[in-house]
Length: 258
Length: 261
Image (cartoon, rainbow over all chains, first blue to last red; front, side, top):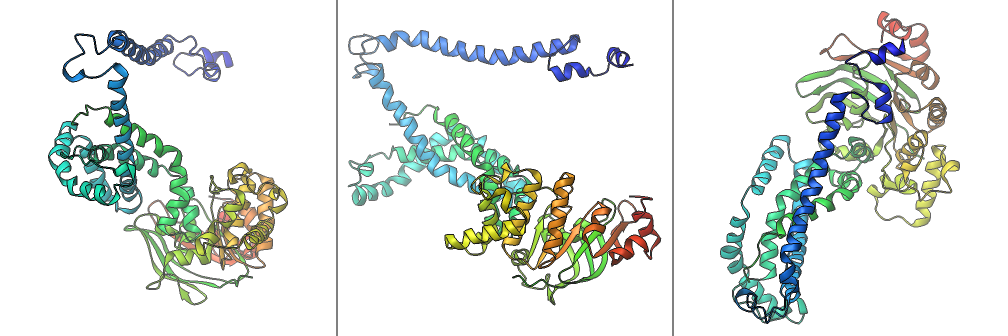
């Protein structure tokens, strides 16, 4: 009788399901091949990109930049080698991303919490949509906004910082005359990472098990106490990832208004 | 020692939005008794239980009409804060829900820390011990109070939740099918515990297990529903022995004798 059930076409094969092998049925094998192939393809593409970049960049990395005729003038003039040119750029990327995270992440988490746990359902839907819309703004628009609005806007504040807090190395003069500072860059980046950090945080907050939320509420927790007892501990492992990926996606953009 | 209180419900209707889920419940629950709510699934017994500490308000659109008096004070009176109601009326849920990132001791203290932040360490330690002893869990966990609550077995987790609920000295303890996710041995432990807790607390328990109702409760309320989309109603409310041996209503007799449900 058991033979009959197993050999009957079109039924699941329990033996295969338990061993995890894509046994005899051709469709299973084809699909396994397709999905494994797709997964492998992404690794191959990434490796190919990395390989291409390294091979094509190797001459410039190895060259002496003061003597090489291609590198000793233009934007790369005055740099001894590849590292003296690139390290400040890497540092700028990290530093502006850090500023962006410090400013952007708390705001994004606040918005996400409001959407997931405070706002009435309809308002939450509208807000979530607006935040997603922010993600659709091309980054060049944010860049121009930074150049023409944020830079001049921040100038007086920066002047104040240099005058009164200049004794802290971080705010030491001389002040940038154009306002092209790490602070301006960080603020623009903060706005740019807002949508992705908000929407991923919102998803995580919404996944908090109802059971844990009710446990806190039934003990007489206010909504904020419930969030501290149930939502944050649950989300803690999750939210650092979106914050980082949000800033990684944004800070790699061309960034040269120095 | 907490002062257990009398609960009086007068003509209570519970709504989810426009939908009437439970209709016209009136009953009086005496202090220091165990009252069991039985009835088929969807008859509104859990919904009604939640109105006794306003936990139904967690569901958007849920609201009530009618009165719930605890020692004469209306839970739904103007200006009554649901947060304060829940500090007086504790609740234990269907599935054990200790806070997974907190230690066993912190779980017990969770409710107290909401009420007053600072508490001398010795007082806190005493409270952890008395609450866990009250929940018959102390001997099993006293050497590992710093471990996460999720490291315990299901039955132990449920007793931890009971310890957490009684640590804030509530007047009333609500239990929503507290044993439905537990094995028979753990169920027995919880039932013994209910018997002991009755000395100090007014307990209301929802159960699908009729033997459990006969074992633990003094009075039993039978809820039923006429059909899908119809409101649940309180059919009969009497001493447990009457409900199970000599009920007044035919539907009750059919249900307790296993003819439906």
